[in-house]
Amino acid sequence: MKIYKTISGIVIHHQENLYSTTEIWDNFINRPQLYRKILEELTSLDKNQVFKKRIESELLAPIGTQEVWAAGVTYYRSKEARMDESKESGGATFYDKVYEAERPELFFKANPIRVAGHWQTVNIRKDSLWNVPEPELTLFISSQGTIEGYTIGNDMSSRSIEGENPLYLPQAKTYQRSAAMGPCLFVPEKPIPSETEIHMEILREGKLMYQDHVAISKMKRTHTELASFLFRECEFPTGCFLMTGTCLVPTGDFTLHVGDVVSISIDGIGTLTNKVAQRN
Ligand code: DO4
Ligand code: MG
Picture 1 (cartoon, rainbow, N blue to C red):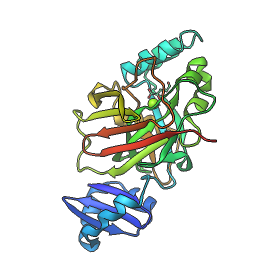
Picture 2: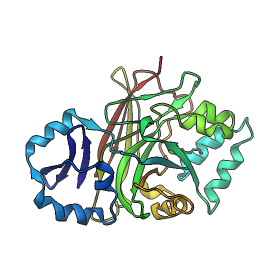
Picture 3: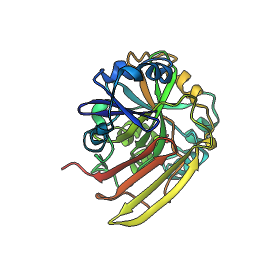
Picture 4: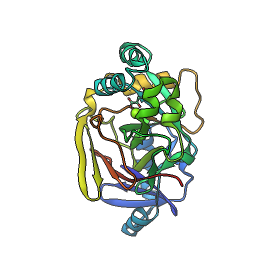
């Protein structure tokens, strides 16, 4: 089941049918056993294929008042790339240690105003020379700590700022439109399968600059492990989103340009596309 947030309300896509409700987003999604609850409600909702137009022309990022958090160094490839970019600063050892440690790296990524939706622009910073998208399976966790859904996340990152000094991580990671999420909230009956693949491609003036994919089974940690660390000492009254880390890192000579188009696809969820921009 896929849940879309649109200007005119929520659209639910289930088994080829479209349903709509004007329920408030936060109240609608922040419920344990979300799949079962929505399934029970479907017969009482408006059902009409015309709601497809709302998905096509009124789509918003699938977020209400939730905070967006992110996990880091959850894949070997991320550890390697970060150790490489920080070797001159002497920060490499921290990535090595956190990959092996019991406690994962978790950081605050964005509040809702910094999040772009499908086809909105994401930014690279003007004071950053080396920028990449990070395609990440993103969990929706209810206020009770249960994983209820998934979306596609782009954890836009400045490699030059993070590489200069790991203490600059918040500036490398959190700025206007440094995150994208969408196109929908995928709410399956069972947890997402480990064979699920994440694909990313980057186009520059129509030319393919990068293309790769990975299965989420390559991740070192489990989703429940990450969620339980996040909920240890934090409350999230309307639930929260948690990006689970990247495994797709372009080679060191690649940096994003203004105008590049980044598309991230995850099996079962869809495709999140964003054009790269810079603030004036
Ligand atoms: O350690 C810094 C951030 C790591 C990250 O964002 C990732 O591994 O995806
Ligand atoms: Mg990341």
